[in-house]
Image 1: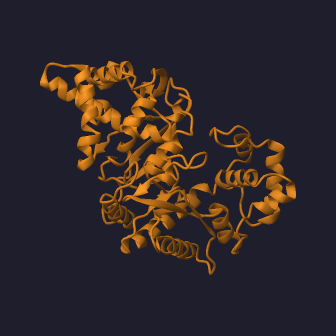
Image 2 (image 1 turned 45 degrees about the vertical axis):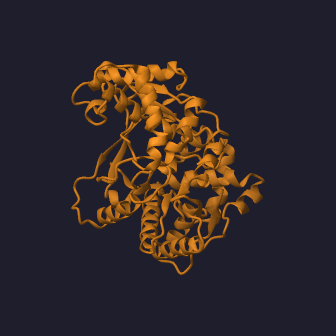
Image 3 (image 1 turned 90 degrees about the vertical axis):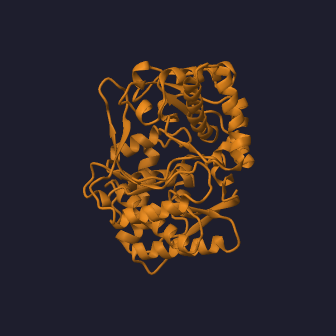
Length: 425
């Protein structure tokens, strides 16, 4: 926990833009021994500072403080901003903030204003639109120190549904796309995927890990049949930084340090297994990089974009103008040169034909089946995109790595196994 926070502090707070904010969500706090020493003093302090006389008002203030602080605890480690509306109309009956989060306008704004006054929150940034005008808040270093230990106390409820359809939508009068999702409701409870998710989440609900939340299976709504398109396994710990700072790798599972077992070049390796029926080099990017005199990372970015999306022109433009601040911009001439070599090296792989969603679905199936087998050995694991996170205990690495490789070969129907890399703090 302290190591994870030290890593998080290496990163500057992200820019106060919509892509770097999370809308306030329902969170619970685990009532374990540490609750009294870690949570109660903060709730007592802010409730006393807001100073409401009526018991009902004190209860509303305390409830708002608990939820806001629970969400802000995540921002300590993700370096995001917390977005929440201050408009009174957003707290009316039938709305998300009141009916789903049990927040009132008066108590919520009073807590936010008091935390700014007390030096717990940075000055708010207004004008970002989520579902209505939202104001964005970030914890100050003072509050971060007080919230560090909350990372293992805060959790999302482990209640179904665990399967969602997602889509991007441009809403009238708003700039940019908004990511929306809805539960999958047209499947029986005994459907294999629903049953698998229920079993895995029941097991995970008994474990302790950072940003504790159930695993969900996400599908792109407008792709049919959706089970073959974009079945991506997601859980909140995936949001923790891992590239510029090893925040995620410095968290704990059940009090133990962790490692991540990563499938190297997985989308390219799966595509080669499917379309070329062959095993590729342990590092399939480096030869192209050496021939062109460019970096391995540049080759990787180009190839992954071209496997994932179905529009060559959009891929080129997106590579030259990346959304992610951490992602390197790839000039169009370089992009085209890399793709020419990639097509010569892998002539049977259909680049620029939108394989990404199908490969995400296959990757999700591999992760869930690996988790299922490890669970039967009473080994906790968490899906991290194309990797599996496990406690770094004796035999854990070898067992998890072997299991992941076996499942991959079975799902791809190959006689060879993937190459992996073990990442550690």
